[in-house]
Length: 308
Image (cartoon, rainbow, N blue to C red; front, side):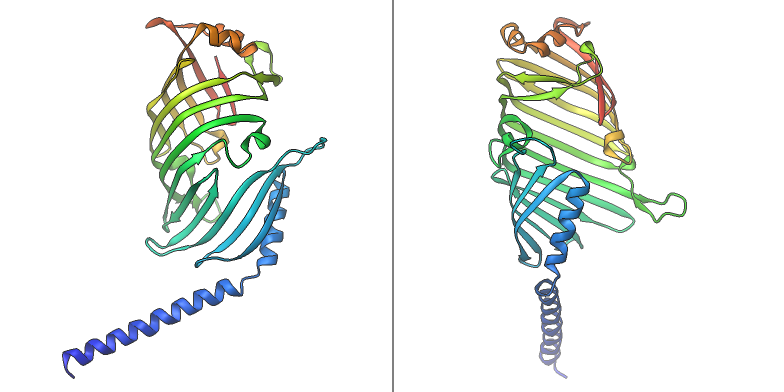
């Protein structure tokens, strides 16, 4: 058989195989039980303490796509809490490398999550062009955020077996990097409840004044769960902020342990506007290297931090 004839046969085989794979995947997404999936999503949201609303759920481009997604907190209040709005959420397989991908359209930008691997799971998150003033974050959180955010996460999580349980990805052994960059980050007001150690263990309700953080840059590097803050700083007319130290990851993120030194220098007039928060900041001791700055330590767990 001539070389050209052999090449035609090979091309034909690959064409038929590719058509079969595409048809199989398309049939899968066209016949997927979307109503059952919608009910499962609502059930899982309910268990987590949220109401979930999905305007439409159906096939996307080799994916399952939900549009008009709203997530609101469960609370007995009148009026009820406002929902956080997602334009679209798509979930589907990735080819290079083989794995699972999730794409979220929110805050006027995109959050892309990719997970791949067998014995070690590589997780990549790329959040770009996120505008915190969009998607009703103010109504959902009670805080009027402003500014744009870009973040990139690239972590490898080895699978670890515990007893008779099957091997699961272990965040406590993760290696990789996390990078954050925010532009013109600010809080334009709002309210929240937070624990201020100087005023007791119970959460204190606070009305927030305008707080400008300015441009924020951060980078963390992890090696087998032990993280080091390579850079974290923010600077604005209101506040200068720097952080150094470590973060020890745990299997569950809320049990991760920060050991972080936070240095800050607030503008005196800005500190007065902070009210109770400003009074608490004034109790933080001066930085031994530069008395113009104050320095506190963030310890405890990420789910229940202590700052002194």
